[in-house]
Image 1 (cartoon, one colour):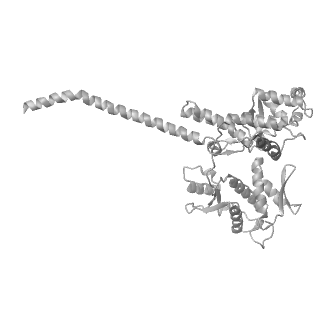
Image 2 (tube, one colour):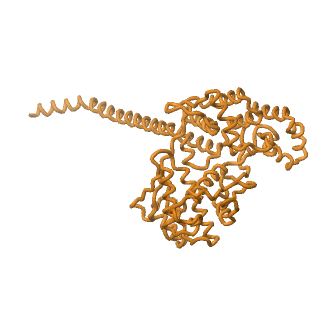
Image 3 (cartoon, helix red, strand yellow):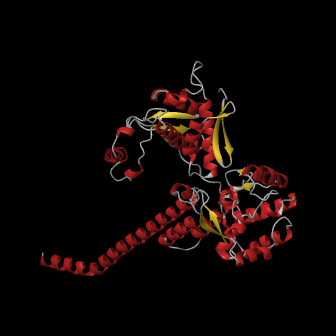
Length: 442
């Protein structure tokens, strides 16, 4: 590691610096690599890209050799980094496209997917700037030379005709592993109140208590909730029970509405009225009456002392973690016990609803419809991500259906056998008389 490159956030935009000086080419490439991604995804990608830029493949290389080096050297560099991070590169002989799998002995590989996607876009940006050839080391050999039709045909050959070949991206490295099931909390309904009780005892300010309360009410992510403003609340419900919010990957655009309880409405309104640094509710309602949206957009619902949203580091390390450690709050399950994180409030909300859906007498179609509605309500686009919350419940439901079908089949077969036996008994006397007549004739 030579440590010369640093990627820093400057006025909400990433900037690459080498020995303190801005590098315009790499700054442009990094921004394109993480553009339109959520804040959390950007930070994961940026940490990896920083490591990538500062990694030395050979002692004699120049600090910027990674920009224009050959395809084979680029892949050698990436594979060396992934190996250092505990991953294993596995080549499969049955893949006709020559790609390989990135696997890990323990833990999931979702973060590696983020890294690989960002690095692919990073290389593409460098290529567009004519700083390196068009061949992308993250893509299979010759991918840039194929037409759209040829790519579809290759996808069909690799994935099979029944697959959605449009999803085939020609990736040379495929992060492959089984995502861990989420921790199932013994009392998911009780997690929110327990966290809030610990926070009040620790002395959280009103804004943090309000933010955690909203997260516990409807299960939004921290990144969905922390930036919302009085304008989002006013536009959605006139300061009542719904609030417009962004969703993961929406790049700040308000695309969903968070639902809060009537008690939470009163709690947030009281927080505004008690805080001399913020306008009270009379002032906010006056701004709403004249539709002064710019003024309402300047008022955050959960501000720091400076009037802007907390960073996640401050939110978690200054308020959440110390309060839960002081109170000794743990998530208990049949598998293990861990200290809860803010995201577990979301997991608890989803698990509570999943338990309810599977715990009532409903048909398979009704369960599927309810799960689809829950997935939409909590803003999870990925089927794989949502299925993690079903886990054992779905398996047990499938097993229950199998047992019910087994019993139905058993009863049906029993009825058929019983009917045949009854028919045999009815015919028995006639057969006996016939036999007697035969004996008489003889």
